Length: 199
Length: 257
Image (cartoon, rainbow over all chains, first blue to last red; front, side, top):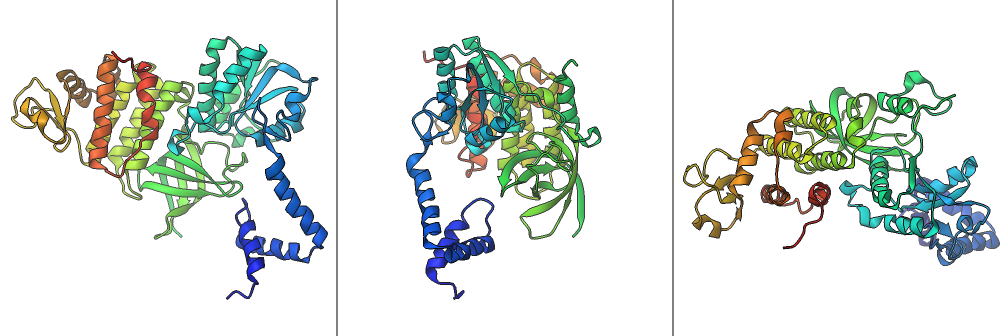
């Protein structure tokens, strides 16, 4: 009825399932792909297929990996006794971009959110405990988001790591760089003052 | 579109599209409302980070009748309950109460008594560092009352006798003393100790709830009683996810004997 050929509509429908893509954007993208050369379209299709066929979760840290172990875990120049715990594999990217951390990561695979039926058993906490004992880890930095769920998860991880005796730290929370105190809320300022550092 | 201003407790948040989120709040003036906060997942000047579960906020939003989700305008943080957030047991307790309100109330059904009870309970959890289960039970008793199925804790629900109590009748919400009644449908075993604790909690001020001492076995019975009672009155409640872990968190894993 819309005048769009069914094949094009199917492609637009599939693209519209991607996060942040609405129906109109999906139609524009589908038409753009149609206008591209066959080689370009094949490259796109192959890239999508490869993502599914070649990528897996790292057997050690649960990051996205091309092989059994990810590039970060395989890099012997990194500090093997320092682990940064994050919620999702996508959280590793900004941390790596900052170049402020040279240890290893551990991806929990989510947060503790009982209201959304996400419980401890859904997270890779047991594997973290095993890793710490096996690799004699010196310090674990918990870098879950400073949201309600992220904070609860941080508390739980810290509790579960207590018997291992490893040093557990939490990333600082406070006023973002470039922002103004005037606009910071009470909770943020309290946390900023609690986590103040000596100059 | 009229602008509404009210105080509210954030019951839940969920991500929506790339950077927005949908909040569900229980407000003093308008009951449970869902609000779309465009860009709410970004840490910007406009959304500095107070729109999190458990926070008490002064909220302004645009209301349009017939809409399930309203549009956010602004907020001021009233109370972030930071001490609760620093303690796993208290966080679980607070989340369990927030989930109870989330699942047992309907949209835009004003209930000021329930709102005040929730605020008072979160305040008590924030300052009291012991026996959070007693604060929780006190709050659950109040929730039952404000939802219209309060427990009858005076005398035996069947014969008006003074006890000793041996069972709890889900239909009447009262304790019973006759042994024969235990054979009836909808009657569960509940000791005089359980009755005594709930009776005390019903009457005591919130700050005195933590005086209740209980054995793990009795604590588990009370948790079970509340769960069955809520499910009896709200059959659609087939799960209370945040309730599941509580007995283990409070009293450790149950030992079989």
